[in-house]
Image 1 (cartoon, rainbow, N blue to C red):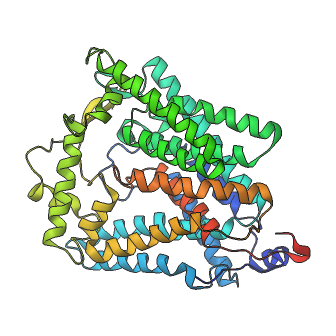
Image 2: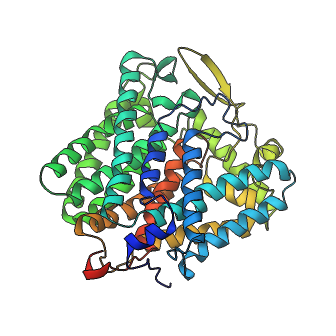
Image 3: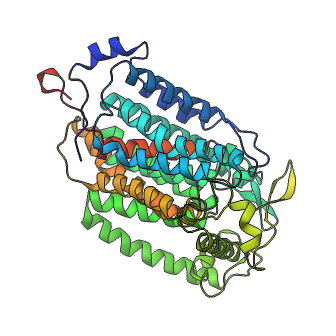
Length: 448
C-alpha cells in the first residue's frame, strides 16, 4: 500500500488549515465524554445521540475542514478499505426492506468504522498527541473502574442472580457490556504505555494496570474476560515473549484452580464463581444467556442463507429474527438496578458482529468488512520504520496489535451495540490506523 505522508512543516500547515492547532485535544475530550451518562433506557430504539457521539462528530467535522483546506494526510491507496466498507454500508442501506431504519444503521457504522477512525488517525501525529489520547483513555478507565468497584461493594450495580452486584459504571443497567469493553481497551492502553515509558511513569502505569482486572472481573462479562486475556497475551509476546510464556503458564494454572474450586461451590451462593465455571461448561451445559446466543447465531446464519448477496439491510435483523430463531431463544434478558427495578430487555442483535454483518449486509458486506479489519490487523503487526520518538512509537507498536486482537475476539461474542462506550471502539481503531496506515514524514531537521 502507498505510504501516506503529512506536510513536513506541521506548524505552517496548522496555521493554514484552521483555528484548531491540535485536533487530538478534541479526541481526548471525546473520550472523556464517554463518562457522561447517556440516559438510554431502551437500547433497542434507534437514533440515540450521546455526548460522546457529538464529540466524535466535531472531530470528523474539524478534520473534514482541514482536508478541504489542503491537508493531504489521507491521500493514497491505503485508505481504500475504508472506502469499500463505506460503499458496502450504503448498498446495504438502499437495498433494505426498511430504508428509513437502515439510514440510522448506515450513520452508526460509518461513524464507528470509517469516519471517526480516519479522523483520529489524521489527528494523532506526534508524541504529545499520543499522550493526550492515551491519557484520556486511561483516566476514563480508572474513573469508571472505581465506580464499578463501588457499585459491587455497595450493591448498587446492575442485577445479577437476584443481587445488584454487577459493575456497570455510569453506563446504566441497560448497557451491561459497556464498562467491560471500556476496561478491556483501557487495560491494554495502560499496559502498552507503561511498557513504553521509563522510570516513575512506568511504575505508576503498571500499578494502574494491576488494579484494572478487579473491576473488569466485577463486570461479570465472560466475553470481555476472554478478549482481554488474549489481547494482554499478544501485548506481552510483542513486549517480551519469555515473560509472556511464563505468565501463560501461571495464568493457565490459576484458571484451572479457580475452575476446580468454583465447581464445588453451591450454585446459588456465588456470582463470580458461576461465571468462571460457565466458561468451561458453555459447550456441554450452557446457561440461558449462552443458549440465547446460540439461537441468535443460528437465526443470523439462516437469514444470510435466504439473503446471501446483500443481506436484509442495516438495522433489519430484529425484524427478521423471530421468523428464523428457534424456540430456545428467550424473550429477553433481565436488567435493572436498585432504582429502576428489574425489567426485560429484548435481544434484537445477533450478539456476534461478524454474523450481524453477514445477515444484514450479506456476502458483499462481510467481504468489505473483513477487508477493513484485515487491513487494520495487518498494519498493526507490519514492520515499519520508526518515525515517532521512541516512547510514542513503542506505545503504538505494543497497543495496535493488542487492540485489534481484543476487538476481533470480542466480535465473536458481541456486536457494536449502542451508547457512548462504542465511540471508544472507533477511537482505538483510529490509533491502530495511525500505526499501520498513516506514515507521517519527518519534520525539518529530522525530528518527527
